[in-house]
Length: 209
Image 1 (cartoon, one colour):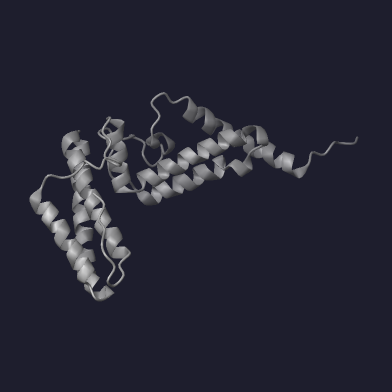
Image 2 (spheres, one colour):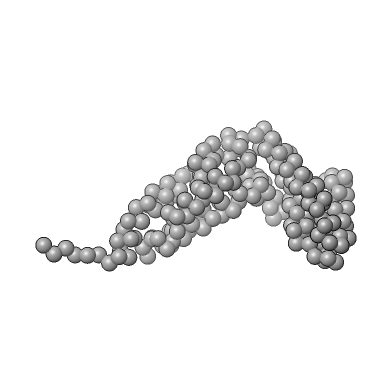
């Protein structure tokens, strides 16, 4: 008996496509879909206040890679490629957002109808905080070498750590007003971190608010 042999590419597609279809069906059918929906193993309780604000980024990355291994557009036939591309883009965006405390906080606030990521008017009305930010900017600009930045980096990492802790508390308590204020504050500290990381002698420091 002579058997017909399918081309190798067809056999590969046939074997991979079934693993993709449950993903597509699962995420399209979720009426309350959020970025958290993509990562049920790492984030089984979903977003706060039911789930935690903190995220195990190592576990998140592991689950992300597993998802992308199944949803990558190159693994699917032409008829499913556009759907796979859309799903892959959504997974990428979800991972990028959730692995960053700042982006995560901004996203959670957006779910409640509060946009702070692109809101230039979202500022902290705290004179002491603003003075601290301005003084730090001056210190960065006056630095003569990377050695001068060591202590500043340690101080700023502490600020970020404390701010993330406050966000954990505020989202757990569903205190959205305070969470918004802290998310704006964290944006200042992240901007300072980026300025410290990109430091060049004599280069002006521009902090986005």
